[in-house]
Image 1: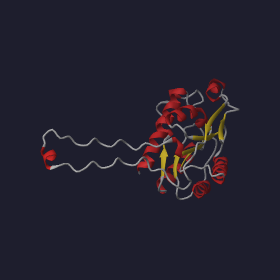
Image 2: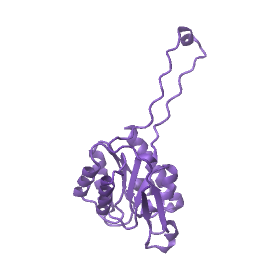
Image 3: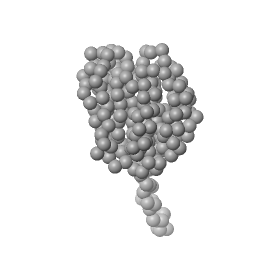
Image 4: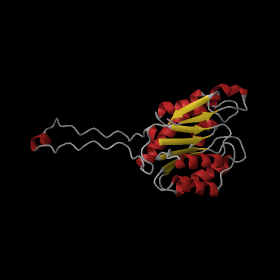
Amino acid sequence: SLKLFASASTVADASHAASLRGSQHATLVAPPAAGTPYRGPRPAASASKPTASQSASPTATAAPAQSPVQVSGQYVTAVGDSVMVASTPALQSALPGIAINAMVGRQFSTGLQIIEDLKAQGQLRPIVVVGLGTNGTVTSAEISQLYAEIGPDRKLVLVNTFEARPWEQEVNSMLAEAAGEHHGTVLADWYTTIEHRTNLLWPDGIHPQPAGCLVYAQMLKAALERLISS
């Protein structure tokens, strides 16, 4: 089966090199047909109508509330940079079967090429997660190209960025605008999630430590649940 690699061959800060060391693997497993969005499990069949005596019984109890819709990792392709590289094990645990293609130093333009290649190979799943922006700006033209690549039948999660770099707010504003303007898109707000919990980052102030990776994974899982419930 085809394997995607989240490579971490180079890192700038030796203090957290261990969290990015080696290659992380995510295997593509029998994805559903492209163009068929995941809409969660089918609702449970309706219970049969109660009899008059059952309705009148003071001991009758209401049916339990339905559980929130859960998304399966096998429906998700994630493309990202070094923040996603560091978080790969946590993502694989939170979303078993997720296909991750992440690499240190990756910019948005390169991510677009990855998405194009996966689509051409029939490997782009119904839900696409894009976690890019750490390493450079994101333009409106690139956002337009992203939507053209994923097409109208896929859903999208855009993960914003937390970093003390000149383009941080520009990138986050661009991603928030895109999420607000496009149906079937949600923003996974890493900036707000981590801004008051920077003790979970390495000293570079960008890459999450193991506990921060768990927070990243739970943030993304919650965003996916919002996406498929919308």
